[in-house]
Length: 167
Image 1: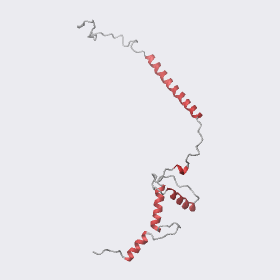
Image 2 (image 1 turned 90 degrees about the vertical axis):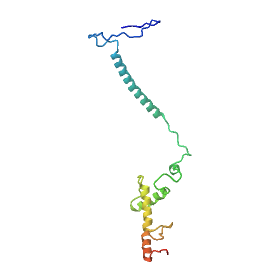
Image 3 (image 1 turned 180 degrees about the vertical axis):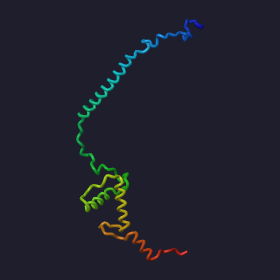
Image 4 (image 1 turned 60 degrees about the horizontal axis):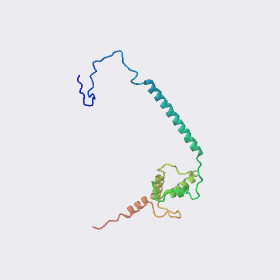
């Protein structure tokens, strides 16, 4: 194998050592110290778990020391906290009236239960209200029905005959 030396005396080629074989040596202890790596990994794991529990305990201590300040007298409560109409709901603008009507209707039947918390409750209540108006006619502010139901109006038109335009 040839070696080329430069002016500064550095060797630029690695000599070929593939022909050297030593069957007796399979691992040299100077390569990697396995016991040291294993000890480091175990110590790192133990310290990680210890830090986790210490932080958990520290957060518990901080949480127990927190004192809630009293609510301001200016803070909004209940209905005052609701955003202005129209709200994002199934039947905008019907919310309070529907609850009153539903509670009034249910209180006649059985006690005064609250309306269910089902999101579709409001839509169902509006549909029931609209179906009642279509079947029995509209109701004025005093509670009396005026006009006539749609089905009855259809029958009256059919009895009188449908008006038609002249050609």
